[in-house]
Length: 339
Ligand code: NAD
Ligand code: WQD
Image 1 (cartoon, rainbow, N blue to C red):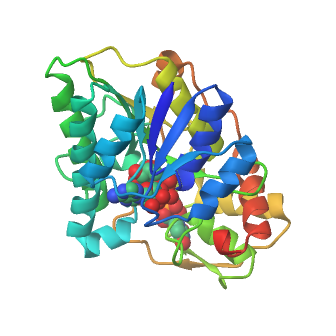
Image 2: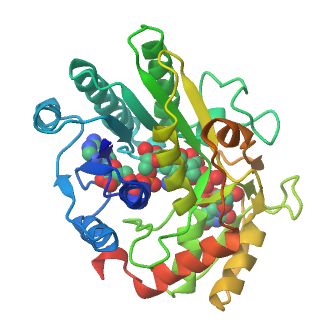
C-alpha cells in the first residue's frame, strides 16, 4: 500500500516508516520539521536503503495536501503530525488547538474528497485522564475534560473521528492509544531528539547518563505504588511501530470506530526504570526525590488484550531492550541529530 505518513520525520513516525518499508509498503512523508530534522529522514533512508518521498509542508496547508493527494495514489494515512509537549500546551493552549485540530480537519477533508478512507491516528493514554482502575481497558469511560490542552486535543480528535464513522461513509478508522513510548532503533542511528530540556523520563535519564544534565528529579515518592514512585507502561518504539503495520493489515470494519491500547500491559516505576537503565548502560544515574509534578497520576498501564485479539499484536521487547537501545542512540548522538 502507499501510505501517507504525516509527522514522519518525528520520533515515532521515523521508526514506523522502517516497519512499513520492511513490510512491503511505500511511504510519502509530510512534515513541517517544527519538532524534527531532515537528518532523521536521511538516516531513516540509510536504514531502509532507499530514497523516501518527503514533503516539507504543514498538514494545515490544504493546498499542499491537495497537491500530494493529486500526485500520489494514496491508500491509507497514518497521522502522527502534532505537537505533544504537555507542559507547553497548558501555557499556550491555542498553539495546540490550532496545530493539532486544524491539521486533522484539513487532512480528513482532503482524504474524503480523494476517497481515501483508511486512517490510523496517533492517540494517547492521556485520553483516559486519571483512570478509575488499572490496567486500563478501551471500554473505560473517557472524561469530558483532561487536565492539559495537549490531551484535550487528542480527546477532541477522537470524538471527531467517532462522529465521522457514523456518517456511513465507509471510513475505516483506528485510533491507537499509545502508552509511554521509549527506546530507539537498534542501529542507534535514529531515536528521540527533544529540542529542549526533556519533559519525559527516558530522554531525561539518557541525557543525565551522557552528562548533559546533572541529575534526575524523581517527581514524588509518596504515591500508593510499589516503591512510591509513578508507574507507567513503557513501550519500545519498535514494537509501537509494528502495531501500525498490524492496524493497516487488519483494517477496521467500515463505519465502526475502533480505539486500541498500545502498551505492554506491565507497569514499571520510575526507580525501576532508572535501575534498568543503569544496568543496560553501566552508568550510575544521580537522582534526587522532588515534589510531585502537577497533573501526574500514580499509575497508568494498559490492558493490551484487545490489540492481541484484533491486531494479533503484542509487545516483544523488554524494558531492558529499550534502555539498551536508548543508551546506544544517546551515547552515539549526545546532541541528537545536531551531531
Ligand atoms: P514528534 O514531535 O517527534 O513527531 C511529530 C512530528 O510531527 C514532528 O516531526 C513535527 O515536526 C511534525 N508536525 C507537527 N505539527 C505538524 C504540522 N502541522 N504539519 C506537519 N508536520 C507537523 O512526536 P512523536 O513522539 O513522534 O509523536 C507522534 C504522535 O504520537 C503525536 O501525535 C503525539 O501526540 C503522539 N503520541 C506521542 C507519545 C509520546 O510520548 N511520544 C505518546 C502518545 C501519543
Ligand atoms: C513518566 C514518569 C513522572 C520526568 C507523558 C504524557 C502522555 C504521553 C506520554 C503523549 C512519571 C516521572 C518524569 C522526570 C520523573 N505523551 N518523571 N522525572 O507523564 O506518563 O506521559 O508522555 O501523549 O500524554 O503526559 O510520561 O515520561 O513525563 O513521566 O520522575 O524528569 O516519570 O512523574 O511518573 P507521562 P513522562
